[in-house]
Length: 167
Image (cartoon, rainbow, N blue to C red; front, side, top):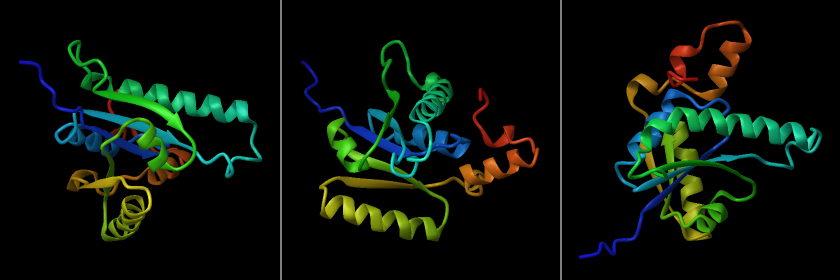
């Protein structure tokens, strides 16, 4: 008998600058509740209006390539697209709908993150009609953020323990 079950796709959106071990764990855990996870690298073209579009495209392309390397082991020959990575602009919920996502996947580290994400989840459900699933960061990743990694790296600190092994 043929499996008529619909593929459940989660959209995990962020700037991922850089993609951390915490992000990777959210993707891995997301595969426990979705058949497929799309890692969506978003950027706001309005915030980048003073930058060369070619440089922005190059930066986003480089980020996508690094994330693809980090999540590649999650794909298998029988399921080569369990995790895909792509860029987008505009509203996350609109992109999720365009990609056929069943829900948005988000990770939080703190109560402050929860309040922010809950407000976005409320808007996305009420106005745009898409649910959000929020996963709490595991304790060993709760202190890691992209901005912390960037700050440490800018001051010459080794950040390799905060990033996926192959980055």
